[in-house]
Amino acid sequence: MARRPAILAPMEDVSDAVFRRICRELGAELCVTEFVNAEGLLRGSRIARRKIRLAPDDRPTAIQVYGADPDRLVQAALVAEAAGPACIDVNCGCWVPAICGRGAGAGWLRDPVAMVAMARRLVDSLSLPVTVKTRIGWGPESAMPIVDLARRLEDAGVSALTIHCRTAEAGHSGPADWSWAARAQEVVSLPVIVNGDIRSAADAARALAETGCAGVMIGRRAIDHPWIFRETRALLDRGVRLDPPTLEERLALCRRQLLANVAERGQPRGVFVTRRHLNGYLAGLRGAAAIRRRLVTCDSLDGCLEILADTERQLAA
Ligand SMILES: Cc1cc2nc3c(=O)[nH]c(=O)nc-3n(C[C@H](O)[C@H](O)[C@H](O)COP(=O)(O)O)c2cc1C
Image (tube, rainbow, N blue to C red):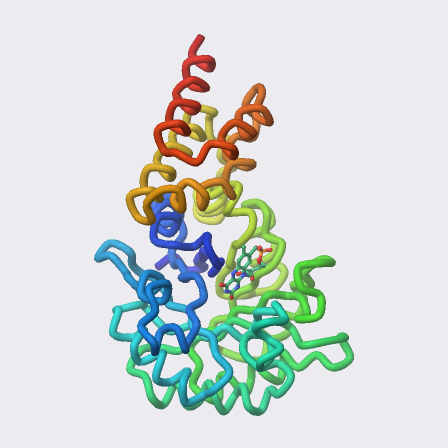
């Protein structure tokens, strides 16, 4: 693995097997699955089973689990471990009320002592490394526990810590404050991964330089622009600023992802999950808004392929 990896963030309905393959090919050294509900995993739900399925070439991938009950989390993590991930990541950062309100996700930040005890239980019960993804704290900065928490999680045997540099209360609003990741990395020797608002290769380089962190994790920008991994590697490893992908390359990725999503999820679900990427993939194309409108109102694979072929013909004309 690269000395300072660029990691694909766990993202529900985004960081699935198809998108992980794409991002890995473009330079993501590690990918994290969508979060998996511990209860769903223990019930053997179809969704949970899909989320933890790892193809032989889908490595290294971390499986992320979430839940509020340490016993159930341990049992679920044991099921996930059998799928052969690189490590088990525990979600302690999800701010969605339906999840953190029940004590899972960022709900753990309301009781950091319980969070550390839960992490220790996982470390003691699993054979694979356990990692934690969390935020800088639950609420206002005066109550920020992340630096102390990093120390305690290291002491509990956690192998790496990803910090989304916002509070849980902030959700996705306001700027991410990377300085908290710097402060945490300063006091621990476990790898700290800085996350939040890394939107370009230059941002990734700056985040690493400013924080001294062991790696960067990229979420939303990758949805629009998975080429960020290629651009980041080129900048970090060779000091090279790559040109953006060509329009042909953008359209080719669109088609490839559509076909792969339909192969994986069938129609129309495979068509639907591709839509989230269209804004970014079509960027720079003449008439992008109109092409996008046609694509998002078309539920069939054949129809979408025809729209893409039409666009390619116009590009070549
Ligand atoms: C659509 C979407 C789904 C997400 N799902 C998860 C998830 O399943 N687990 C998790 O830990 N974080 C999840 N996140 C948060 C991201 O992993 C990341 O921490 C956050 O978006 C900040 O990074 P960014 O600014 O690079 O996007 C999600 C974010 C988005 C936008």
